[in-house]
Image (cartoon, rainbow, N blue to C red; front, side):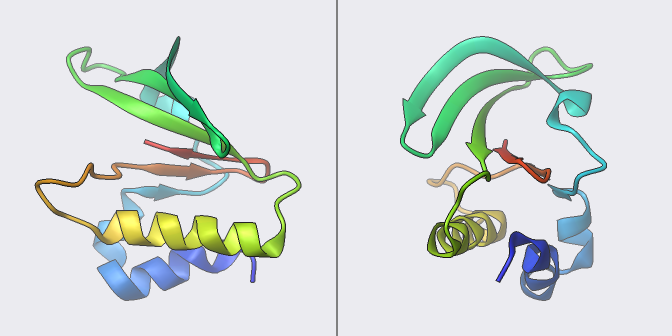
Length: 111
């Protein structure tokens, strides 16, 4: 499986309207909606988390996790797909909400 089928699987779980505004393919870039700062909030084996500010709304601050898709094995790609699908479907007051996902051929940004 590739990550390309993720939008279809998500649409089946959360509906087309819920997905369309949150899962962005290669034609959209995280930088078009957010100013990703140089401030690193955390790092881990799967990527770096940086502070981002929503453009036009400086009071809205987000954490952006940048993940490299290059060199991922199929099992790693499947785990990433499962994480994205699960977090986009979650809506709970005690769990951080995944607001947006920006996917390109080489990276995925989780906002």
